[in-house]
Image 1 (tube, helix red, strand yellow):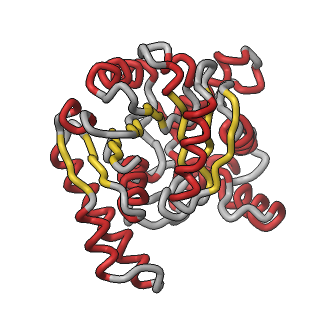
Image 2 (cartoon, one colour):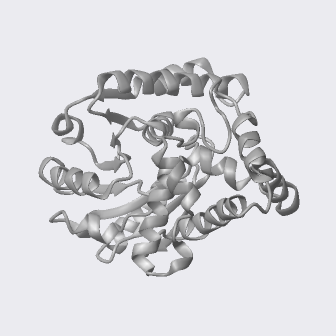
Length: 300
């Protein structure tokens, strides 16, 4: 396995492309937007520079990694020679099903089709293809170049051979693969999202303010980042979508999204990506402007 195609050049897609290229794989990075592709290359270059500054990479290794990445806006061209295709498009089931139907037509017969979905059923995605045994979840964590975990999700029909191939491949990327089965939210988000949702309910019900909630979880539970800040980082729209998947999948009211989260997403406050969420991110760094707004509303 030498040639990798990555679909989607956003935060997750460019991170996945970065990691594969850094480890010597030939990467085809695919997006419908040429502007997005150029932005992705700039992001990858900056992230490689950070590694150089920390002494973890040389200039020569950076240049070599960048030379391993080719970009295209044409899906058929981008995936035609790939041994593995990793889909990292927007977390939308209809979009992913459409992409996998097209991948089934354009990819080599023996190619493995992986998705970076954080919650959508691998079995459902695989059913959109004529090769369900070769479809698997390869859920990287954000930021991909830093985070060690890869959640490897087996669909109902995923073969043992394909699962082992992806587990071995993750190790070659200096990641730690963990095999899980295909149920709503898998392991990571089945546990994480109810915690984030409960933190939002704690704010919604006036128990404490944003900074106070995050401080309790950071200092009291040794979390590196509070749940509300983490929600901003993930994207509040993504959190809402995953909670809906959990709620629909299990039919349990404990997964129902907090009304405050619903309202914030509808108002366009999606976290870091929109510049505001539970915190303000207007200048690229966290401050407490938005958090203070919540605090004032709690006092009133």
